[in-house]
Figure 1: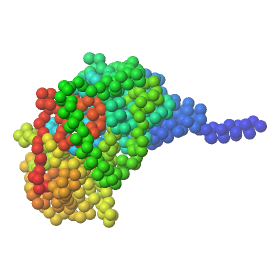
Figure 2 (figure 1 turned 180 degrees about the vertical axis):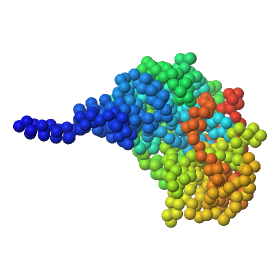
Figure 3 (figure 1 turned 60 degrees about the vertical axis):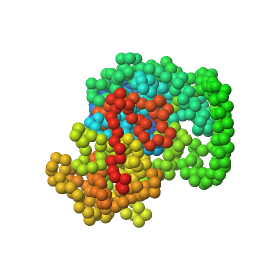
Figure 4 (figure 1 turned 90 degrees about the vertical axis):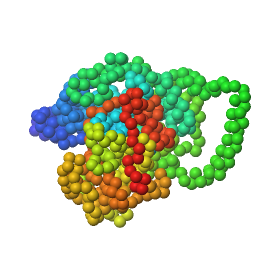
Amino acid sequence: MASSSCNSGELAVAGDGAELILSLPEDVLALISAHLRPRDLLALSAASRSLRHAVSGADKAWLAQCCRLLPTASHLLAWRAAVGEDDSSSAAAICRFLHSSSPLLGLWAHQNPELGNLVTVVPGFLSLVAVRSIPQELSPRLLWSPVFELLADAIGRPSFLFLHGGAAGDSLFPGHLAGGGGGLHPKSNTLLLEAHTCLLTTGPHFSRLAFADRRRLLNALVAASRVTLPPDLAAAPIFARSDADLPLLAARREAMLRLHRDAGGGMVRRSEIEERLIGARKPTAMPADTAGDRMRLRRSFSAVAGYVRNSLRQMVTRSASANSRVEYAHPKHLPLDEFLRSGESVGLSLRGARMRLSVYRNWPNMHDNCFALYKLTTQAPMPGRECAGLWGGTFGWPPGRPDDESKPGKALFFLLLTYEEDSEGKLLLIATKVLEGTHYVVHPNGSSMFTARVTEPSTESFPWQTDEESRGVEIRRSFAGDGIATGYGFRYPGTKPGSLFVLQDGRLAFVWRENKAVLTLQRLDLEEMIRRGECVPALPPIQNFAYLTKSYSNVFAVAPSTGGTSFPASPRKSGN
């Protein structure tokens, strides 16, 4: 009987595995954990109570996960101190945050304005920080403005939202991540700024409102929910530029959590929102004669608009894009008052969704009627596809340098390079414009600046023998391709033949064959450029999140009085 009891005990240990895990040295467990994903550890801890106790108490296992994602050990120590739990709980909370918020990291964009609307999400201090790169000329420091921050709660869920916006850098607008972290799809390709009336129950969806009502509601919410940081923290950094910033970042995070709590998470009573909406719609008084003239003019315009609308309705219906028939296209809009009646209060929310988007050459076909940002797919370099990733550069040879003041006015271009196969299975390298530093846009946002046929070597020679340092130029490889040119109007540019050269120092240079215009690129570490860059004032919060108005100039430019830079005209001749 004793032998039988002993055998059954051994089977129980083998089936559960908790005692085996607890018997392992922590260093061995950390080594094993380094080869697992956070979800693997979480799944293991959910298998049984004993495994939950064993895994949650394995401090080094969670630390190994955190060290894979955080830049330095000092950051990890500062984050754990900010969580304020015991060692194992703090490590698990940090790991949970890093894993659950990872779908937001990377590059996001919107079609408007056409110069470029590029938003980068990077790790902050127990938070994610979204910043916008400002279209600009080549300079030593990249200009950027904050868009939003998403802070972790006590157990590591990305929960607390703060929108940025307005000229005053201390203004914040609190909200929540939709679903308390559950509103973030693991493969999110769209970030939606919305309003919600209840955090716990399901009510009418914000997307069912008409566009005008959605815009009015969001503007009313930011007007009612604005909070400000204490004066001593208003100028604090929003992410660590060095370890010396960590104590100040910890104090800033505590202040933001306190603001979020005191503001009720940004929830505003329905009655206050209704008053603001009614006040915003009150017409301003005007002289009687002016009012009569405007009324007659309005009726004339209405008659013309009705004729045009009826004439084009069928055409517009047929030409609607595939993306317009998804989540934000409802046959019948929900009245705004019905949406507001679903709860006693309303607040801002951010939702990460996976939507069906048509994509052409790595550029999504974007909605023009919802407040959203769209994920850009960034390919990692690999053998045979070494040029994939984000590149930046200028037109002209020799290429511009950030610290060269003798040649000002060179527009800075950001291009996202991706590989695709054409209909014949041949590999193409496509350079998509995501940012253009000219004063007035030359090429549409998301257009292909050039396409190189990787399997077709170029027969052209590089036009220059020396670089900016008077050193000889060595060419490693060259490919035939086509570069963007003035063709069938702004929206549908044509192409002209050219060649892509891979230089010995790692730079790329695309040369148009006809007039020898050259675009020189080097690989960018955008996160590091942002950390070393300069923060500039942002637009009002809703426009700052998603600028929906069609524009061909730099709406994000800093006024000269605030230290902004000038923006050059077209960097190329009109023939290319």
